[in-house]
Image (tube, rainbow, N blue to C red; front, side):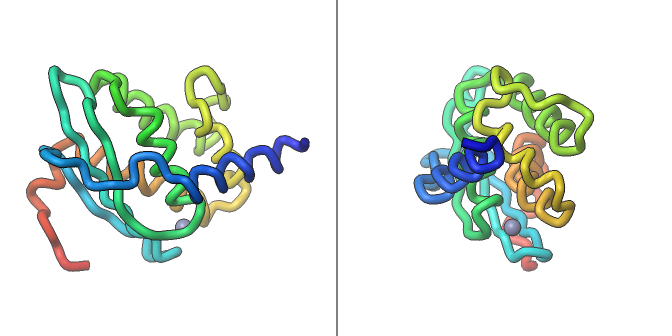
Length: 149
Ligand code: ZN
């Protein structure tokens, strides 16, 4: 199977069976954002315990790339210490920008999203959940609340 086809299968699997697509009870951190270019909307919920991302979930709607990326984020960041989770987010962005090599040991299914690097407009779909995640972790989401969009 060609690599590109394999990547598409991985993305479709996450899109059809998203991991952690639910609100997290008792989440201290949550944040929502949308990608007006595509119409994607993602809300991230995080529950922290002992400096780690103990529970993570998301809600939202959008294209297959944005939903698959959020599902992969849940898989990649749940259970990690906060600094490690933030590091994955930074490295994922770098990978999507082309400055970090896709490495399956580090990124798991996330490497499949490098297939969209050829389509600059879709990169925004792929990083949306990570934008929201990083904002939620920074606590900035608390201040904005349910801001109208
Ligand atoms: Zn999209």
